[in-house]
Image (cartoon, rainbow, N blue to C red; front, side, top):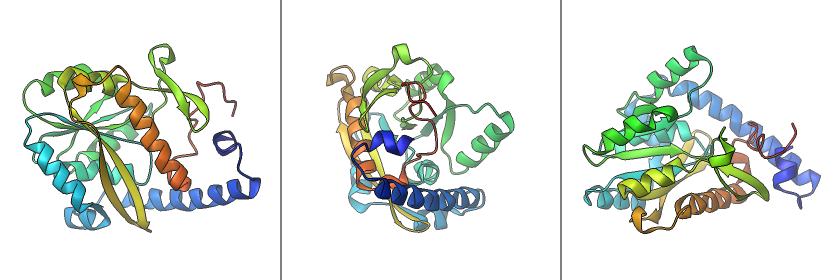
Length: 246
């Protein structure tokens, strides 16, 4: 249903092809997530590499004294990208996450995702993150294509041909802290191998108009999905609050 609604002009044969490739990628992702429990730092950096130009860009921004916000979607292997965050920067690193209902699974996520130094903060604890950001420049990662519960205060925009709500908290926080905001594109190079690329959304968040950052993020994510749709997380109910029946 997601594919039918997101690609209204594609033939059914094309949609079945995307669906088949998606489930193949999802199987890879599940195996890679299990692998992340024991993967070494050295192997992780072989399996998901930060593009040379993006690494140079990151090092340049680290010396500005500003916070760096990295926004990404459920695309490619976002779990490995979160692990990599603690290895590729000299700044304190944080990642926001949505608390799952299963507390045992949440403990597993916290233990696994923080293995290499990235500190995890639940979305309902954003105030504590803001306190930490007052202390020193930091890098913060946001997987920003979650479905917001509070749709009245969400940012609504056309995404994959559909009216879609997005969290805008990272946009507001970036403006409050005048962060540099980067979009992370995670491209699958081969089975078990990815390349991470950064694109600058803004170098001075305070100068941007309201919702500029979240809108630019949506357009960049949409571009990646159109380019290689099978690598986005299609099997979740992304549009459940936007009137799509499943």
